[in-house]
Image (tube, rainbow, N blue to C red; front, side, top):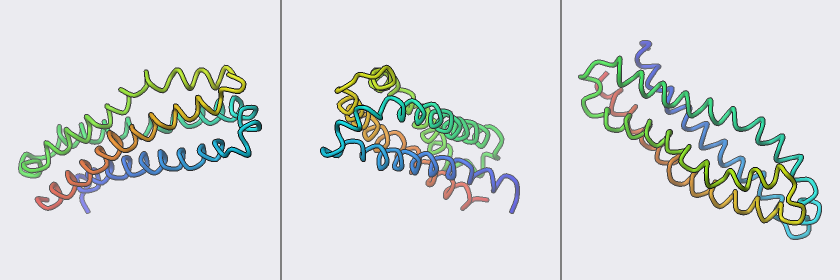
Length: 159
């Protein structure tokens, strides 16, 4: 398997990981919304979410950066014969990965409110964050993943 062939798998792997991580975030954080845990969740969320965000954000940025750089490298260095049908898909995958950042202004207020301990409002802020997170995951993250899979499939069919 040639180096260029392996490179076409990198954005597929990074977008798959990004989407999986988004799903895990949703699954683990929705536990704090359980009605019988609401009081305890309001108390625990500032500490938990601060740690969670400080550890998770660099991972998300690393995955997005990997997608952007690998798609850009493929577009820059692959022969035009390989990119004939896949270039628009790589451009779209790269664009959707960058689109993840468009949601930052919509989630930042909830992140700050939870980290600053909004007391009885922490679960409500988490719910707000989860709504935006879900929309982001089902739009730009899912679209980036699909585009990178289609792009790699089309590229490898010409390799």
